[in-house]
Length: 392
Ligand SMILES: *Cc1c(COP(=O)(O)O)cnc(C)c1O
Image 1 (spheres, helix red, strand yellow):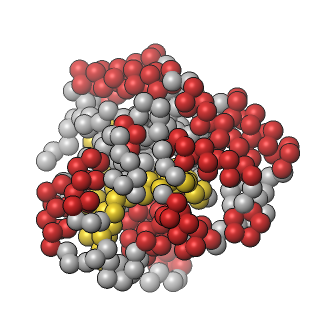
Image 2 (image 1 turned 60 degrees about the vertical axis):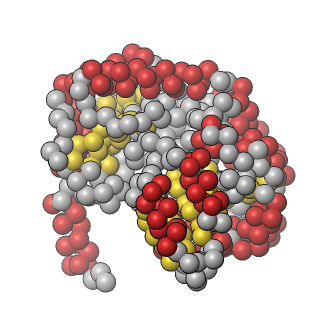
């Protein structure tokens, strides 16, 4: 327990010594490639606004228009009197977009994951999670009275062994769709088949695939063509490619009705502002109509990957907007990040505990808002750092 000032100070000092100290940067501009951060102009490659929609005029307009009509606050939880027609319309649109019977809004992705995992599991159940799953999924499992196993990253054989050994009646398999710090995708079709073989349920968190992947942008689950028998619990967030805020869970009618009765992070929290729901609804239309955004994004990703491979940079196997460079040590990652900043480029160093020890990295993200010239600027800056592969 750290319950006195000396202990807090000692902890802070040790974090600093290990290059693990964290500090928010101050942004004074809109979310876009050219930003005013900590008092200086930078070209940013760290946003999750993959389609460049956070500052889209139509989406901003939808928010303004709705706020004009309905005000700002939702005033209460959904089950009191906070459930607004704007929420209802958005839930219906999300259900249609994901090809599910129903969808349910949550105020954040973190809360959706805590709420859903805990509503679906109890003592005696087993939760199987990919080791690299997002912290909110892991925390959901930790809060639950169920047993949690963490299988090796994307390792179907390891999961299969663990599932075969388990005698639990209720098995929940949980995975990120696109892994947030690696950019690779889960083998969803295989996971779905294996989970069905063991009469389990598969939950997919598609925070980084939703909007970006799939023919219409409905995410990795659309790309893999998986229905709600194969992926009964589909969760995604609205603060990344969608450009707004919040999250949702989509599935069949019974699942959603069950969550309304029992997901505590749905029940005991204020509904998102109706205007945010209206803006999100508008964003869903933009995502489906402005297909050039996904095409532009893919072409920039390929340009970056080719350039980075030519420079011998330690890229990871990813075809998504998340293009991390594996550096190794936290001190090294911090140094590279600072050196990039000196050249006016903002890329964040991701360190433990967000990633495993010895796997610190520069997490580069590319958005449809970037230009080819900006990708080349990034590559030139990276070339000047002479980044080498981490020593094994
Ligand atoms: C960002 C993220 C979340 C959390 O969503 P918020 O809406 O930001 O709370 C959950 N899961 C994954 C995989 C994420 O990347």
